[in-house]
Length: 152
Image 1: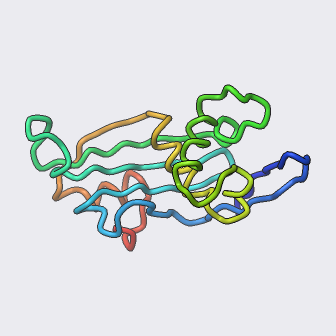
Image 2: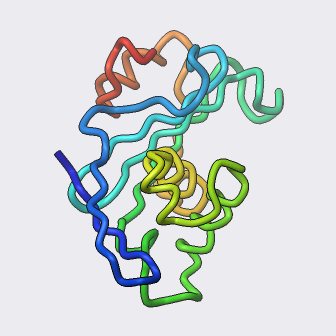
């Protein structure tokens, strides 16, 4: 089990357990509508976002999904000392935009932090983009990105 540490304003320590399995925070039918797949380890969150062909401009590609792989380090996203951290700012905006909670600590305690870490990582960190044909989508997601078949 992966845990991260969160400290509140009073200096109280909170150990937050993160999921051990890959999660899809996108549509329930990712091949047709896109997905945001997140996996958590000891260092950070790995996110694979897919955009289906119908959401991409016709002159951009034909019948291919845009697949973007990103990684966010917990130390960057949950920075207790640097109030000017860009990564932390993106996470704070995700928390505020959710309408579910108003602080990092509250998001963690209420169980919303894993999804918000994934969304903030997808928006802030860029690493690798590639096009995948519709016919190779499932095989590529399973073999290249370790997304379980049941999430596809």
